[in-house]
Length: 272
Image (cartoon, rainbow, N blue to C red; front, side):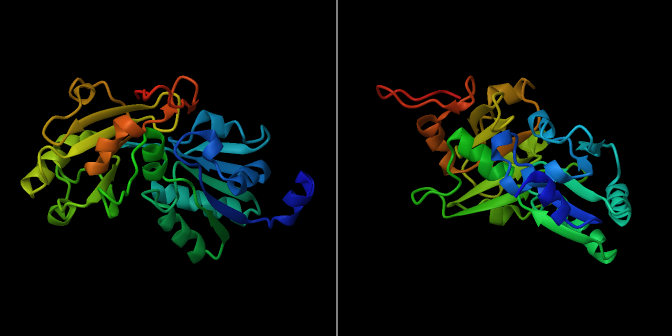
């Protein structure tokens, strides 16, 4: 089907909630790419990479609606209203989010608002940061010898504390993945130790995951990475806690200089 035919087959007054993945533009799904090509309006977040934004045709209207810590360019209610407004004007709209819309992306709230206004809508999943960044760092989130389950957790502080079920999180045999947890690493580590997780439990801070700027910083709950203590790690960063992190020095495969698999030679493994 030619591009023009595909565009004409899409209904007007339609919103696509699209996951852009964790950063590597080649992790964008084919369906997401097609929606970007035919969109008339795109509202995009802070964590959408420039390489992915480059896929958007020049004639498409683009609006930045990103959120940084304690700094929202547009309140969530304003984003919801904008999606409804553009759709009711008959536009093909893409709401482009880093990672996956339904994993700490507030896609559920936007979908609720659109359904309430009887707007035609679809959800296009993306590779979430947990699986994408962990894979590129060489950290399997589950492993028969290390973890039989994995938990995705928000690392946002509420009034200076992470109000989480620490007893459940501190159980062995699982992997914990904290989104948006860079500013809370010390609180998270201390809370997990206080609730029974061994202080020597390994952790990883993955900075700029899946991109050529990716850096993986390894430590433990009681010995945080030097780069973190020195304030040298910048968001977006993912925190992984669990025995699986101990596999990273052996399994690291991604060469950040080339952006490709580095290969293994003469028993040597790439350092990330």
